[in-house]
Structure formats: structure tokens, C-alpha cells
Image 1 (spheres, rainbow, N blue to C red):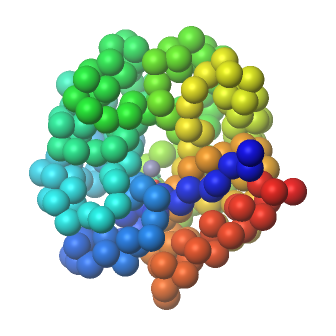
Image 2: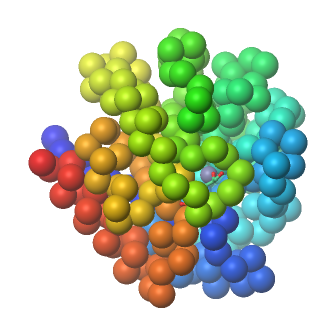
Length: 223
Ligand code: DX5
Ligand code: ZN
């Protein structure tokens, strides 16, 4: 069965003064990726739970909350309670990733584990059994508009192999530098869900950009 590519526009590249309109412009997306940054885990600061709750009220698309924050144990369940479809925490920030996954799931969301470009997959294979999504970062977390780091693709290939062999049950997601030039290599490596910020919101027509990315990824997956 061929996999179907899914696209998650990242709201980080949207106009924050017009969030409801910006959400409506990507109604064709599979998930809406929302980057929560705390200026501690990453050098940047974005938005938090009250804004996510407001986005949730107007979004026609399920929310994919990417928490780039310290102390995810404390904050992650709140995003699930707010109605997010998926809540992703960083492996590097978790003291007990398994417990965080349990709490996110108990609050009604899928649980995601993110790894930075320099973080190997190996040490996390066991805890990944308790997660629903694996987010492979293909830029250093913190800012949109950075260049894709292709060196992370072996981690995607390894995750794909473990999913296809039935050892793990995960959606494989990639985040950072995904655009028309890079999405094919990510698709070939085995990604299911593609986060794209500047490639979607930097386009004149975000809906068209989503369709074009999806078509490119689908073609690469069929090869
Ligand atoms: C970066 C964020 C990404 C970012 C991606 O830390 O996690 O989601 O918005 O932006 P682009 O697609 O422009 O690299
Ligand atoms: Zn992100």
C-alpha cells in the first residue's frame, strides 16, 4: 500500500496579527503545526496555551503542537486538554518521556517525541513504543526559514524500517527546511507528515503551495 503524504503548515511563518485568517488559508492541510517556544529550551519565544486555545476554537484543521520548552511534564497535558490532535515534546527536555506520553494520551491527544538534528535515535527506541508520532527535526529548533539538514535522513530511514517491520507504530514527521526542493528526499527516506512553514506561508497562495508539496511528496513515494 503506498503511503499518502500529509502536510502540516507551520503557523510560525504566518502573520500573527491575523491568526484566524491565516488558519483559514490552510484549511486543506492535514494538521496545523503550532510551535510553542519558551526562550529557555530554544532561544526564541512564541506563544503559549491561551493562544493555542484561541486557535483551536477557529481552526478547521487538527492542531499539531510542537513544544520546544523545558519542563514538558508540567505543560504538555494542558495542550492535549485544549483539544490538540497531537502534542509533541522534546526528548532532550524530558526527564521521563514515557510518563509524559502517558499523560498526553490520558488527556485525549496523540503523543509525539521530537529529536533535534544532533540527537541519535538509538537511545529513544524503547520509549518510542509509548508514542504515536516521531518528529525528526531537520533544522536546529528555534526559527523558521532555515536550511534543510539532509544528515538527519538516516534517522528517518531507520524509523521507517522499524515501522514497516511492525516493531514500532508511529507516524514519522519531519520539521525544518521542507520546501519544493527538499520534500522529495524526505519522502523517499520515509516521512509521513511534512511540516512546512515558510514554504507554505511565504507563498502567494498557501493552498496551492500545500497541494504542490503534497503532489511532489506523493510522486517521490511512488517511485
Ligand atoms: C522550527 C520550527 C519549525 C519551523 C519550520 O524550530 O519547529 O516548525 O516553523 O519552518 P520552515 O518550514 O520555514 O523551516
Ligand atoms: Zn515545529
